[in-house]
Length: 131
Image (tube, rainbow, N blue to C red):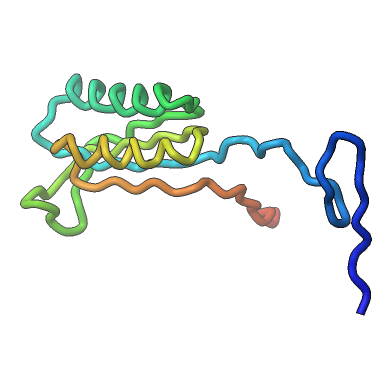
């Protein structure tokens, strides 16, 4: 059994094999979908979305995209609500931002449901040309 060769460099600690990478990866990209209670008017919904974006940007995040899907009927009632206002935000932020965002959603009673996921790069299959 042989052990890996330890090498020393001036002013650097010992390392095994490859050098240690001290660079940090870029911030992950997230997508959030929010369902807001139907009792809120359109200006109030815009204000809630702006508050959410302010939480993200206040933690060092960057908003990459935003879309308001509008009022839609829910598949099943959530807290006695039959419809809700859907909004989507795509952002890039450090991971600790998700805790602050989750706290923001819990404190405000305006949100029926929220879902935040890490965005994955999607590769779509090419569509065959119709003849």
